[in-house]
Length: 204
Image 1: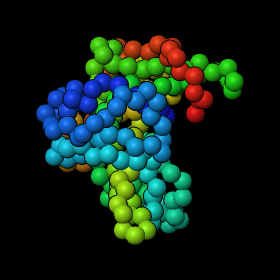
Image 2: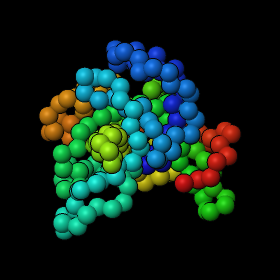
Image 3: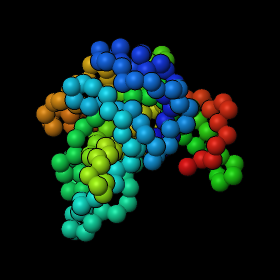
Image 4: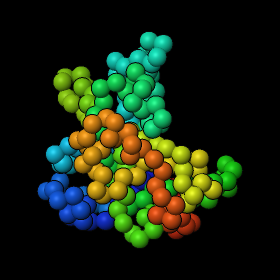
């Protein structure tokens, strides 16, 4: 499942793909980590910068206990059922790809996953505003995950739900049942996996 993303395409390319106004300057980013700001797309559609990782303030689990951990990824099998996710919005996180690691501690290999044809990837995600002390509103996002397709199965047992460009508006604005039908693995052959060149940061 995506634990690090990268978006190096010009932001104009991302905006043009959806027919929306550019969000302002967005430098190329090779290593986007949880806890950092990501560029997301919300209903409209329009861009909204968000913090990657939901802090479920005030939310409870099925036992009625407060959810304490920060949620970076949400499982597609339960995202519309868990009480912790009740009332969250839907958004999309664009990226050129993501990284996975295999191997043992200290001897891990980094893998780069991209669209097989160099296409942008559109990650289905959920979002929620967090109101900080003083009333400041911080939007937060978690990527929705599903079972891996054949392209990534050898390097991880989960992957992000990737939307076809024509399905982005359905995910953003469609009924819950229509959105739920999009939570499936990407077709085999749609992704390219290769050793990540020049990736020297610590594995997650």
